[in-house]
Image 1 (cartoon, helix red, strand yellow):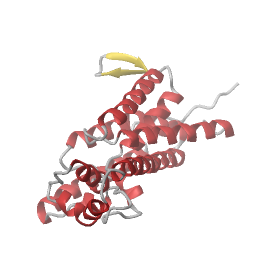
Image 2 (image 1 turned 90 degrees about the vertical axis):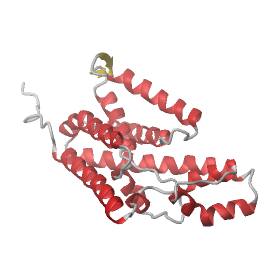
Image 3 (image 1 turned 60 degrees about the vertical axis):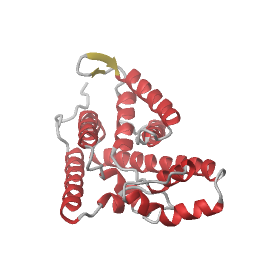
Length: 249
């Protein structure tokens, strides 16, 4: 009896290759425009809350290709994880399905980030005067762009939520990590290249850490933990849908 086998394992399949190229090009463009023209590309393409004057509907997609120019490790980690876990998935699923999954989890992560921001904003605005809220909405973006914030804690928190953009491929990458753990649960992942952990446990531990960090840090560490979880949540339901339809493999 013949069994289906892939014709070969591509170490750098086309979607992974192009995603790496696009992310690196956007990162270099952000650095170049910032140093040469003092223009902040993150302001245009990063995901802002809809109340922000800098919000654009395209940002729900464009944000996942942007990374902060001040954090090289952010893009390095994301691109390494994208290649490390994504190349296996693209080889198994095919390029079209992998790209669909990547985009859905990335967009889903952005949607979750905005929803969580809405809850946080509602809580902060409940203890603020209408005049304070109006000041933040009118002037907050300029204050943030100058590297400053308000002295009043509530105004400062509201301004940070509304006018600090979310950037990075992390939401989609966490979706890929979730998919790898579900598809290959007993595969070993070597933490720090030394400690072997089964993929299913690695995903569960990472998810639990992100959930705890999302509530405990309250964005104090400037990491979009709930966006990471959003990528995993959207990825989980997408995989379960494919599984129900019998089209997972």
